[in-house]
Length: 323
Image (cartoon, rainbow, N blue to C red):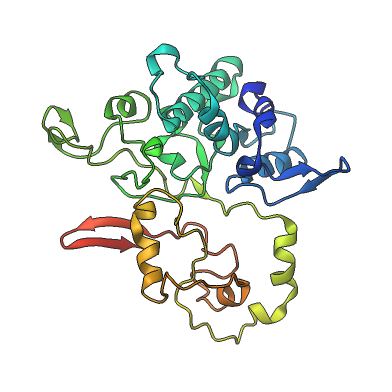
């Protein structure tokens, strides 16, 4: 496990808050305790676990893998970049960079440190190095230097020509084709207009592959141990003879207070098929519903099996959905 310069890890912890919390916090009595944290809290949780793991070695000659901790998703993208008055990476040239572009530049800086300060990267070309890219579409805006490495992500999007599905402009990683081609990879698609893969006056047709099967891995989000006690202690929830009638189960934010078109309206339209959105509904325990799902889709209350996502795509006649 690399001990990275503080700008990539420990120095960022001073900016943690309610919506960018790691997996651990100190209570009013000064005691450290595990908490839910943010959606990207696995970034700090896995780092801590590896530091204390029996699999860890301090002898680089015995190491099979080299883990590179960078708190880019859990802290840098928010709140640090959102509160900064100037770009932390790229200087004047990237003064107008979006936050995912700043994340790309941060990861490039981390890769340059590993490459120049330590000999192990060059020995394998980075193929035995491990990075966590846990933000929504983080593998899609990872710099090209990281492509040979093993990427850990929540987003197993392995389309041949991936597109940006974010409705939040600051997270649109195809927003600047010139930046993408310089730092991330080639644009996908046939040569059209003046730029390869980009119709004249239009958006790119797609980027380089975000996720590579057989190399990269999808991780479930971090959950504290207390989250698992109820389902793991109730034998009835996982009974072999239990009839599973629910085809698919999802529990998450419907984006009522977010930008219009959040998730491209997919989850809102699905809800409208079964519920009147004007009727208030009480919050319910999700365990009973999740345990009723087919075992090949959602066998526990992490809600969806890691790697299973609904990705909308445009087709003639409107939106479709690929599972």
